[in-house]
Image (tube, rainbow, N blue to C red; front, side, top):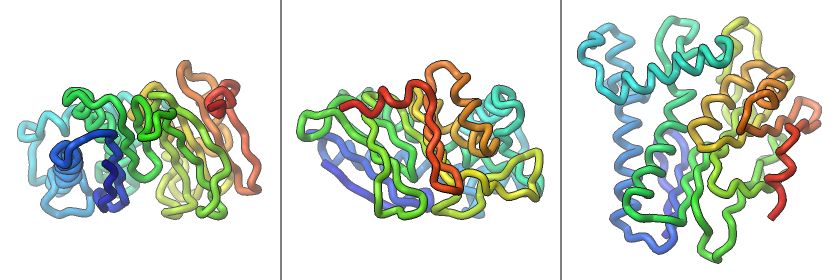
Length: 246
């Protein structure tokens, strides 16, 4: 069963082989709840209340505490290139919530006994097992200059995939060491990690590094990357090619 809905401001697809409609509803219900808690666009969300100063830390939910702690840890692990604090001083954990939520949704499916599934949200993907044809799930990396075209196909085989870039949403990722300097050297960076959460949190930081981001990914155990620069040239980490073999 495969279904796509608009949540978190983007199309989210859930594909579960042999699943009931109830299980699909559980996944979308969870993601909707997370969006209502963490959306910086919803005035009644928890993160909006925190940013307004209406909610003291003693009233924060366990999920909020977990995500904010994870964001701080990622900031430390990326030399400050992942920073959930916006130029206006507000907290915005959006760069980590999506991967975290997909990771948890996949855990929900595992707990329900699902073995073959794929969840995709805005370029962040977690798959498990096989697709409906009994083959490994394949993931296409879009051409950032022509989104109707696929420039690379990979087979994550249970790993997580996350893509950061400016080609779809414009300049929404910033270098925390130069807020007023748009990132123009690269347009797309895909990271494959042990799971979608690890891939997502490092993809955002690596993109903020510009051209140096792919070298940062190269130096991290268990991660592979593929970056496309403004001239359409691709650079990939040492082991990325192994992911392209069916």
